[in-house]
Length: 75
Image (cartoon, one colour):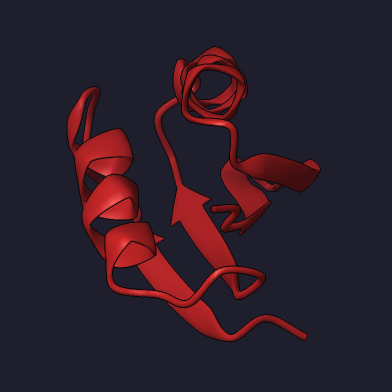
């Protein structure tokens, strides 16, 4: 169960990342955000985003072309 869901389906890079950053900035430390995206490049984008921001990528999956990322806000 996540604290918030962000639907970024149909958006291309960098919009899913930018919207996720904005959502995470408004969340408390330890809260989780699920991002739904259809851009295949989002897999590498979210891995890099979490690595550079220090947020934790808890899971990443692909179901019928919809990528799901669960991110825990840190700090």
